[in-house]
Length: 599
Image 1: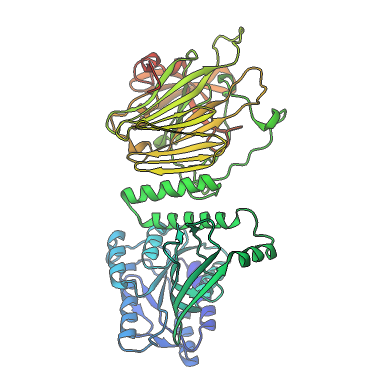
Image 2: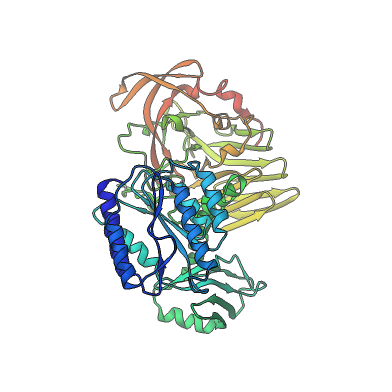
């Protein structure tokens, strides 16, 4: 640690020593190039031992190396010995708090090996809390390792109050009241239960469990509560009646409407995201999809979603719905890339996507460039365009164009946009037809229909469909490929424009490398080079030369709208605009993608 950090740590440890109770046992382990301990065993927190510990803390000095694996294993060994030799009470809570400002570089440095070894050594007996001091730590590694050992990780920011942050964390975990707490409910009465078992219950904390009644008419609930206290086991059963609950809600005026349901959703999302940290492969993808779907349904800001704040526009239409944008609205974008439902609210990189929306404009993200390419397709109403076609997964997406209610005689290009989408999975024998009025699912010979006024969650083998009333639908099918269809509603009495749809891909990496289509061909990596940026016909929108697919194109810097979060106003996405229906960027010409029918 740096001199400043070590002084803050020592200040915090000295304050913590003032708060340790005499019945507690403790020890210190330093891990740099060598592993050193204050004492060989756990020491009771007598006044004499605490005075000696203060002297030890004051002489701790900064070192430059980090044998994290060795330090943790030594701590586990000391706890094992204390329990085997009955040095500590049988009914006691043992925890390890590990503080580091760096990454392992002595002994075992492979983080996966360290995770595996620590989990095996702890074997569920102790709780591990990892504190990451400053920006030089691998926080993801610390978080995974803590969660795998029933603890949590916390960042400590090296500011003036770092000592208070350390002391505050210790205060949270220094007074365990119970261990191994479980709340059990009748299995046939409750479903979708959030976490109901807890390693520790600390003084000043709370335990919240939520779930759904199987029978909505049920008027009582029973729960068995079990745990281990300092002197004996805790066990009791309690019942709660519907009338008692209703009365409690009336007394607590802040509990209103869908409060309990939203609390359940919040806890479920939080726990899905926590499990996602240590998951891999298909399990991680499923957890991500579930958390995203709930986040969108209940409108929570999470690491998978975020909040966008837009200023009211002047002269808004009736009902606050914006008109459909046209190509002429493209312009310079001078600010940072704004948040959207797949962008993290912190400074971490966004999740990239492809989309088609508006008139219709296509946005192709190029993550390695931290940039995007966009183009429009200008075709007549009634034409059907192939957007995605994957012969391996059997997934196809086609879109039918509609136009304005009447043609504009002054316009060189007539506005068109998607009025109908057909999404099919041949292997599942599922066809989904989406219009601004209806969502129809055909499964074999069976048809099910919904309107955009419905709020629906539908799950069946290989298919998850969530309709967020009057806003969007989230669809995941087959291999995990996921899409969002956004509903755009214009002013009902608008003399020109009609309601229309947008399509956004969330899990395009779940489609095969053989995927094609106007969107699908860009699910594979694409690279480009920008040269000779110079003023264009519009002084606010510079032109440049783009080298892409061995073609030299003239492109214009502007923006397109991302409507996933806000179907009315959208969020500006800066991009390089390719003219002439994407000529030179798309494979072939745009007319190659015209198909005869929606399926």
